[in-house]
Amino acid sequence: MTTSGKTIKGGLLAVMATIASGLSAADELSGANTAWILTSTALVLFMTLPGLALFYGGLVRSKNVLSVLMQCFTIACVASVLWFVAGYSIAFGEGNAFAGGLDKAFLAGIGENSLSGDIPETLFVMFQMTFAIITPALIVGGFAERMRFSAVVLFSALWLLAVYAPVTHWVWGGGWLAERGLLDFAGGTVVHITAGVAALVAAMVLGNRTGFSKTAMPPHNLTMTMTGAGMLWVGWFGFNAGSALAANGDAAMAMLVTHLSAAAGAFTWLTIEWIRFGKPSALGAVTGMVAGLGTITPASGYVGPAGALVIGVTAGIVCFYATMTIKQVLKIDDSLDVFPVHGVGGILGTLMAGIFASDQLGLFSGQGYADGVTMGSQVGVQLLGIAATFAYTAVVTFALLKIVQLITGLRVSPEEETEGLDIVGHNESGYDL
Image (cartoon, rainbow, N blue to C red; front, side, top):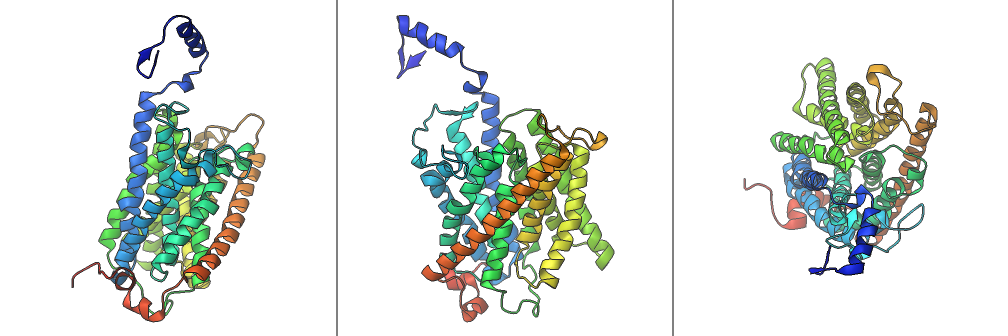
């Protein structure tokens, strides 16, 4: 053994050897697992930059493309710093059932040799940071093309600390939902329900875009959107399979079921369009893909391939009609369909995880429940997690928006909205025409 490069001699060596012999394998760094989570971390960051930025950027009008790219880019910067300062500690520090304390603020006590299981804790911090980046970035789709840049930055910062970090603690940090046995492998509640509900609340508080329901607002660059969608699909393997935190069979199964659900969701959505409208659309295909990915996320570590196929098909159907309902029936301008795709998908996937995790469903069986748990009791826990996450996110998001409104104002003026946020917010344009 060595300490500060010097060999420990004599009795101290014997004492340390005795202590080391009592350590579990989890206290020894695994090179294979570390390599896989390093890769997964890069994949999840790739989902936001450039994946989500391009996906959303292509969906807005050309006068707002830079604003969306800037919002995603800036959120990545702000979320990273806040995760270091306090977010990680609130999510994973020692605390109570609701939130972690500040014992790990500024990553206190976490060094090069600190371990989280059998990977470096610095790597676990970074892996979880990429989740903390993409979640508030997803909300951008709810208020796209009409929110002040200053408001976006301030709201995202407050929301990360007040909503995302505490809910993460509930589910993954040893909080009250973890104690009840909630099944959420990679973020059905933590990521998709929180982002979807926040986007819906933001869309309702800000109000619809000028001309919504009267003027067509088609995507300005579907090539950009398709490119971003492909990046999201590939990056999602890090999101779901990486959440196994190991290079093992659980990660491999999570990757397989993730891919199957994405494919099924995309094909189901475009088939519905083909039947209803006579032609399948590229926009429908990529939206169905995201619905399939978001819906399998909470279930990806618990279900088998056949269950994943059912989840993907169900996601394509349910999220398609949820999107139609939000826009055409309720007339809510969730600009880029964050709630009907991510929010509804997260709800659906969290619920279905409680069903298809069962090992008593034949071909559709999953990995089974914990000892003493039945399908009924597990579904009850899943419903509790959904309801609590939905309610908490909605209330806190509304309060944060009102606070931001008092500080900076939320929405640009009608004249600024007409001119476009690229020029108004950044004095730049996406294209030289």
